[in-house]
Amino acid sequence: MQKERVSDNVYWFQSDVYAQVTAGVIIGPQWAVLIDTLMPEETPEIKSYIEDELMVPVRYVVNTHHHADHCWGNCIFPNATVIGHELCRELMLTRSQSALAESSKENPLFRSLCIKEPQITIAQGSLFLRIGKKHIKVFATPGHSEDGVSVLLEDDRILFSGDAYMPIPYFVGGDIDVLTNTITEIGNMGLENIIQGHGDVVLRGEIEEVTTSHLDYLKSVRKLVKAAHRRRDPLGFLRSQSVEDSGKTRISMGGLAQDLHIRNLQWLYLTELKKLKEESDE
Ligand SMILES: [Zn+2]
Image (cartoon, rainbow, N blue to C red; front, top):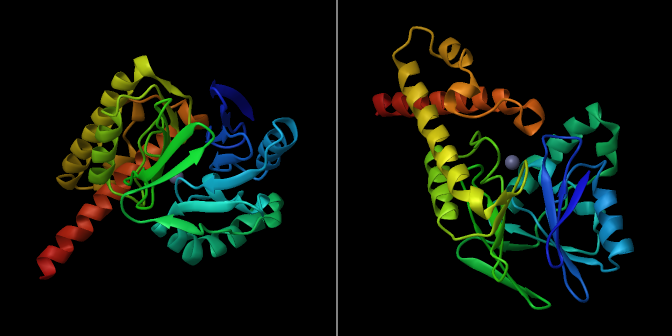
């Protein structure tokens, strides 16, 4: 696991095990707020860093969304209160239990985990939290998934974006249009740093370029899917696409980028096809 200081009392962690997934922590005088929890191999390392080295207990865990790599470590913090979107709670209650059972079959480390869903939830608007002198705002940033939230450190202008920003925008299970709006809004927030849900920290001087590249990527995906509808073998056509042709590198996220690209294309194509069918059935 990589560990770095981002600002005063703000640290960032990046997984060595899976897809460069990230987590973060904000340290207050008496307690800490953890943002996401990484993989079961790494969560205990985060816990011991915060609680044994920095000597503060984790009082709140914010889940940026319900995906396993971000929140299955919640239960390693039994005394912490979990904060997330109302839909994150719902999705964890309905889907995560069986997904965890499935993962436990393949990886015995998952057997030590249990699902701990958010107890404090937001549905609309923002939730504000004060930790020492820092002001934190939690607000919805959907698109990658419908339950996405981000955490803004208002004074430092640092945003923990969850998977709203990652090296390759990914919207399977989410919505490309909603994600486009979210990325546009985040790009205009005047931020100092974006701690993406996967990959490296985006610095102030890079935000504009990264945002434009994300939006261009989503445009390219729409274009390819439009072209696929006119092909005899649309899914074959989409499977043959290379992520580089859509402006992103395949080496990011531990080599997952190409795979995520194809999944994005298939998801959008099949979603549009379903909509077309529903319309013609009416
Ligand atoms: Zn995710």
